[in-house]
Amino acid sequence: METDAVHPRVLGYLGRALSLELSAVQHYMTQASLVGLWGDEAAADRFRQETVEEMQHAERIVQQMLSLGVAPAASQLHPVTHAADLVGLLEHKAVLEQQLIDHYDEASRFCQLVGDQANGEFFAALLEDEQHHGRDLEAWLQELGGRRRRGYARYGAMAPANNGPRGTSQRNPSQRNLSQRDLSQRASF
Ligand SMILES: [Fe+2]
Ligand SMILES: [Fe+2]
Image (cartoon, rainbow, N blue to C red):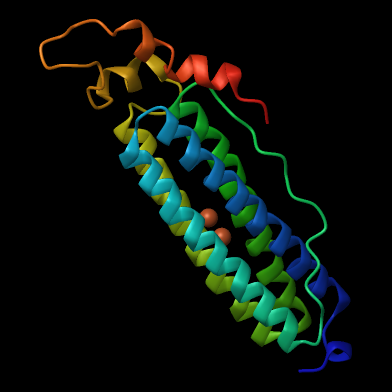
């Protein structure tokens, strides 16, 4: 399909999709590193996996744009937000995932409206992936006690032990310096 056969608004949807996906890559890559600093390698691995999935979405968009004869040019990445604990990070993640869901929902419906079946199917497939991410995220939040129900205290109670030798009930001073709150306060985004 040549560029002039595509509605300009569809190209706009592709451009914004690329910006959102690359924002997600930056966001989840940062979250993976942050929770890694907090000592939660399991959460870091989940964020890393999601970084890869969003990067693959970005690649699909780049390929789609190239197939339409358009140069990919993500306009602006969303700044990374941070929080004092994992539940807070996931709540920020939920905002970004919802933006992606809303965007692909609107884009696929617009394509239907203008009879662009190929791009409509392209956006619909991405919408399905993001809805899947949204469901996974809600399940993860539920594992941690839900949205802000008990927040940090709830997560802290469930986090893997990282407090020194077995049987030691208190953190030593150096470990205390690596607490989630301390690190998030030091982090400058
Ligand atoms: Fe994505
Ligand atoms: Fe996603």
